[in-house]
Amino acid sequence: MLNKLYAALIHYPCLGKDGQIISTAITNIDIHDIARTCRTYHLKRYYMVTNLPAQQQIVQRVLRFWLQGAGRPHNPNRSDALEIVSLKPYLEDTLEEIRRAEGQEPLLVFTSAKSGPGITTYEQMRESIVSETRPILLLFGTGWGLPPEILSLCDVRLGPVRENASFNHLSVRSAIAIILDRLIGEQVTKE
Image 1 (tube, rainbow, N blue to C red):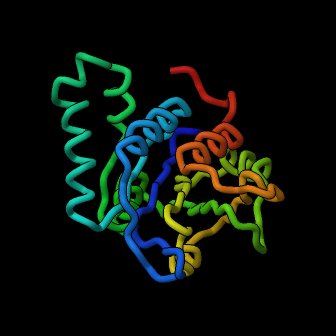
Image 2: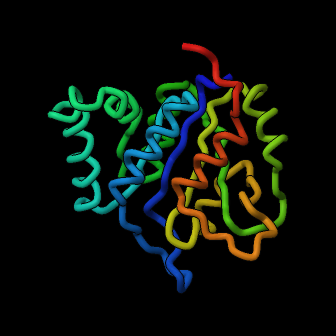
């Protein structure tokens, strides 16, 4: 059930405030906190997708410190969580790695803070996670969301965390934690 669930934080391509395609900046805390959340909910891998070499270097430096450097003996739990992080320059590279590992195309699921047509509820998606035989990749956008060319590749659109809220601007870290809890909750198998 949960052994084929993946997450990807997309930093490129994303929409800017003006609707143009941009690359967004990686934050150190997104590397740590989202990895910890993904590890807590037993996701197989957490992908960070950025096309910018300087941003890739930030991720590589953080991972080196916690996986090979002084960070590992200092905080083994953080190192354990960061072992599931994989850095990719493009979504296509992420999809190819999952195809190779699983031998089939992943079901692509995107989330958005915006409401729209064709929304799958969290309850429906939770049932799909249990019954789906293909790997599932949850896509999380940054900036002002994922562009139409990415959304058109997706099989499922999840609704916003707070659809009717007057203020709806969660950090991506918070949104991912809430979404994973809604989708997985206590279904996590014991190791």
